[in-house]
Image 1: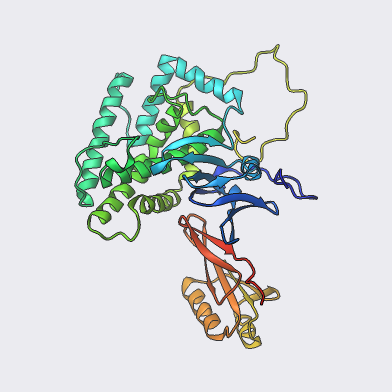
Image 2: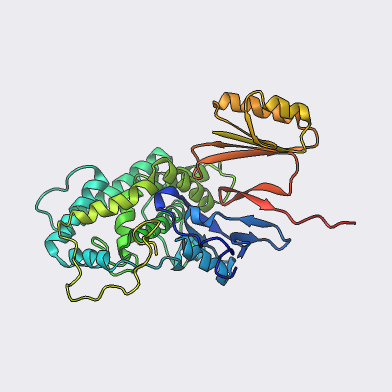
Length: 314
Length: 96
């Protein structure tokens, strides 16, 4: 049982991301494995089974405890476990930690290293994000500037639409309570999207750190991909909830309301079905061939069983 | 898609459910109906349940893709788990 196995049953394998629900946040629970099932156990002995393999990720908030067997089961079914701090700030993750597909990592890296290919990828991301071609003969820096202006305009527009008092995007990752309500809603919303996107980037077999617009962070590529969907999915929900909070029409903490709204938005927009194809589309715009293994390379002595889920699932 | 499971239900309710649904196993009824018919069937369950308990599950546009309601007491009760609808299994009450 410590391996999440049941005698007489083959160990569970991952299913593809598009068949899953998005995320669940776990607060104050003991996560363990009982009879091969992933369960949250309460102090009074109440057990709640969590369908771990049917989720893209599990976000553990401060106060959650998880056993070795539970992490092993999550890893087997290819579900990303993320430990988060206050406000959904990511601390650490496990489950499918990436690096499973060297062919994909090398392809991603070769595009990032080629200035022309990288610009083509950035232009593709611009086109996907705003539904129109990026203006021609612009550098990545200039495109970033145009995007920034557009994003600020969208924020102002949404704030007006939902009656939110909006000045600017500002937050202090070290002091969660310091931000105003709209900024905290936006932070909670982007944390949701980033968690889901990280699961998708890893499931697709790419490196979260090798970004194209973003660089220098462990999740640069996650931010690149999340930005494709940010204005469409989570930002309107964040402003809508912030508007309700401002009018005192909210019966729960704003960040929790934002999370629930984000999950509905993911479902409504079919994000889990679209996100891995979008990652492939963006990288294909680099127009570089996928690398072949060098002829003298040694093939594995024991080939693995073909993946049951997405390419990046082990 | 619509599934109703009843336990400890009086025979007249089980017979009534069989008017619209197929009983594929003891107390497990399956069918495919509109939202309006689903509500009518659930009203029948509530009216005829007596001391039994029941659950109805159907396909719905939620993150999980389905939704469910329960009636009566069972050791398995629905809980809202961060917006995800899961089921808690309560420990046996201490015997006296």
